[in-house]
Amino acid sequence: MKNIGVLVSGGGTNLQSVIDNIESGKINGQIKVVISNKESAYGLERARKHGIKAIYLNGEKEIIEELKNNDVDLVVLAGFLKILSHDFTRAFENKIINIHPSLIPSFCGKGYYGIKVHEAAIEYGVKVSGATVHFVDENTDTGAIIMQKTVNVLPDDSAQDLQKRVLCVEHEILSQVIAKFCEDKIKLVGRRVYIED
Ligand code: GRF
Image (cartoon, rainbow, N blue to C red; front, side, top):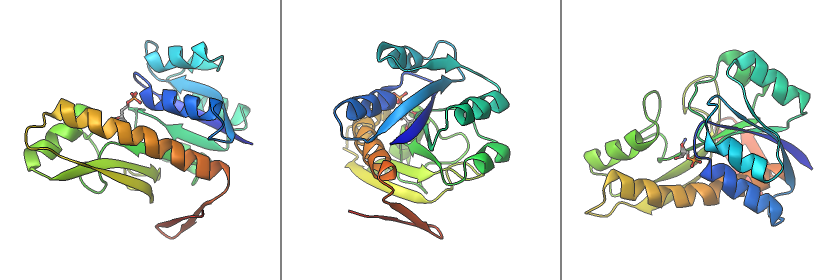
């Protein structure tokens, strides 16, 4: 069974869906620790309600240490709004995944987070958007893409409408990727990711 560490900065609905999928047996892994760089993040509360260790840590060194101390095999960034240093990405090479609320390489990179992503998509006039789970490398949102799922952008959509629709597919694909990772079924060849059945 794989040990998972989850990093959150906010409400933690993605974290919640991972917890639920572990509890229902769909993911063969265990969350050893949830860490937030925001003391008031509701994600910490969600973890504690399920008996999961949840702590506020702001320094990167401390975060790395905590993840190492828990023998974490996979680091999940689930709405973690802090850009990681090279030291961090090197410490967990090909073991960090992130969920992003657009179809990378559109509407991603520095400054594209939260509602801003969806505002940009609506403003641009795209007809489809979606969510991406990718490996985290030393740059922002540039790591190899593991899974993507689209949603339609409807003519009258507000950024908030789109955000809600995308969030639903985020929950789906994040857990699917974590389940596959826990079964060692994700292979990275160059920038291409292959997922075994
Ligand atoms: C999600 O849209 C995620 O893609 C983004 O931040 C949001 C976090 O939502 N990086 P939640 O905290 O999981 O509810």
